[in-house]
Amino acid sequence: MRATVGDRVVIASAHTDVPAREGEVVGVSEQGEPPWQVRWSEDDHESVYCPGPDAFVEPRQ
Image 1: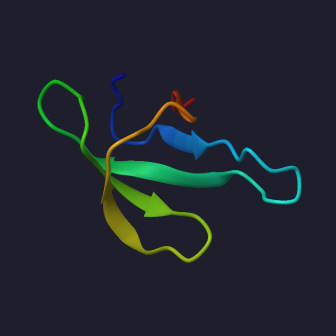
Image 2: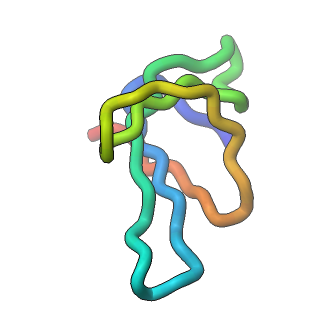
């Protein structure tokens, strides 16, 4: 999985009462491979993130 700065990362929830987690990719390696620096939308904090099988990337528009 690859990403570019500005893409949106979405982590789906396995539970119906828990919303998906979303964030904006703000930093990537030269190849766009993980880990990525992500700014999370729920509280604007940034962290290094390695996506799991429940994550997908929505390209910026």
